[in-house]
Length: 89
Image 1 (spheres, one colour):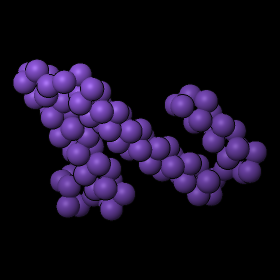
Image 2 (image 1 turned 180 degrees about the vertical axis):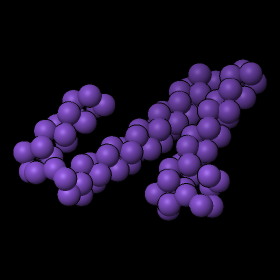
Image 3 (image 1 turned 30 degrees about the vertical axis):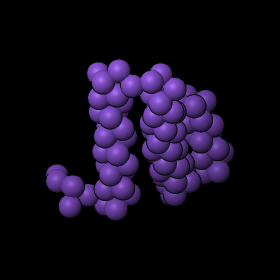
């Protein structure tokens, strides 16, 4: 399956991850150039936050799947949501 045939949320996630990948490549270039540690730290922080945001989007997707699943009752849904949060956060 290629990017164009993916649903919009997956396309958005791939775009977000591509931006994070670019930030990581930028960090590598900064280190190779010998840039100041503070500038590198600032970029590390930006990359971490971008990756955290992508992860939060993924967790939201997992939650939506758990809540929308018609085969689960409320107790099962809450148990699944709790498991997702305790396992992945």
